[in-house]
Image (tube, rainbow, N blue to C red; front, top):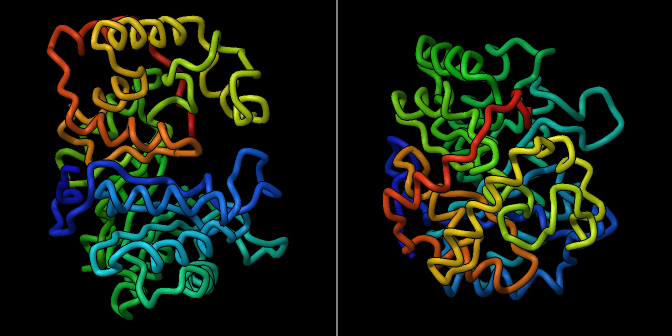
Length: 326
């Protein structure tokens, strides 16, 4: 495993982040593994040198945080682990159990700490921007959590570049802890983040930790077409993939990945992840793993170096998209 600083911080993380949305309860999503089935993935991730783990308070209605916390305390050295979670989406039916108000941020953080079984969250991220709450209220509440020692670093996920730039500026003007990472929608099939968000992150020293780095499984080579819903359990119940990846040219990108992978004698997933890792602004893609090879392929991608002509071939078929993933 290789490691890198998360943006312009001293925090060192593994170049692969294990996304823990896949672990919790299948009552939430049919493809989610329960606690017993999840254990081998945490154990193997630690054995492979993975130190970066990402979850959210809304995954499996909180069960993901519980499963993740117990597994890491069992298998990992917690002083080395970088544990990330998120706040924003509803966790109940009440009006104050959602969003980024001071009230919800404060009570959601307390609940996450309890479920994770830790005293401090390493990276606390806003899952989306909240149009109904002043950004000053959100940022001051997050800063308070840092000052109280309940959170070490702050991150954001999937916003417009102007929103993120504004948030960074507000924090800086007020002397508040600022965001150090951006978890955004970025992969070979969807590259619109290259227009504004990634240059902003590079200029501001923000670590980028892309979600859906394999385009919800499209770039693994397991599907026969964009509308293939039978390849995997997740594909069969995934309502987001048809919305995120539905342009005819998207499949051309998948075919390009397969071609490079075949020449390399490597799985397509390794090639797609190696492409992401070749981008200097990317710290660690967030990968999901429900089969052992998912994790093994991701870790091997860290040392797979693509040649310039391979990168050119992978990028050539791309066609612009509307903004998706917000």
